[in-house]
Length: 201
Image (cartoon, rainbow, N blue to C red; front, side):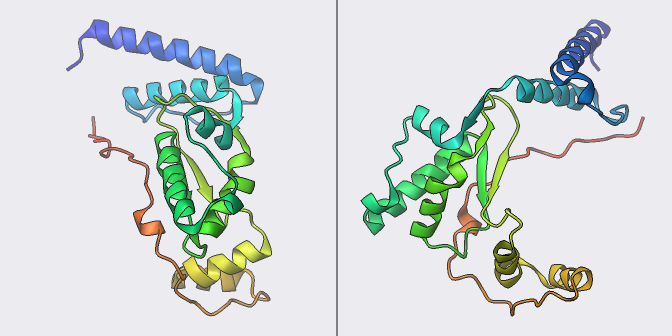
């Protein structure tokens, strides 16, 4: 059991973090009650919120270059060189808390080209390495008709396809096909740690 002084110190840290986060966010912030959260979870929440608001805007492209990763244009690389570079980028992004998803419909060259020309150029928050926040780059997250078609064709399970048909009955659903590549199963995944033990009082 934590000593009363330790609990007081935690409560003070949390109140300071909460006040700081509210100052950063201004009047736009609306947070549901956190009364049911363990103290350490609430403290982590306010710290991550403050870290996010204080973090400067950057691009993953710039972050990778600052981390020492060269990013040559796709057409300057032979196929084998490009594959090695792609996996270097994937693993370095994971160290930065950035994880790529839904890539099995793309060849190595198509994926690297998409990252180099598009995804890595988008502005994002440059969060500190010690933060527990993750960013997910979904290759089919744009919401376009083509993204939706590829998602339904390669990634959607039967339940998702059925739900899509019910909600968008006029949209034709493509026949399911296995994607041409197998990369997603070995991509780095975020480590969320062990589940929190929420014991009743």
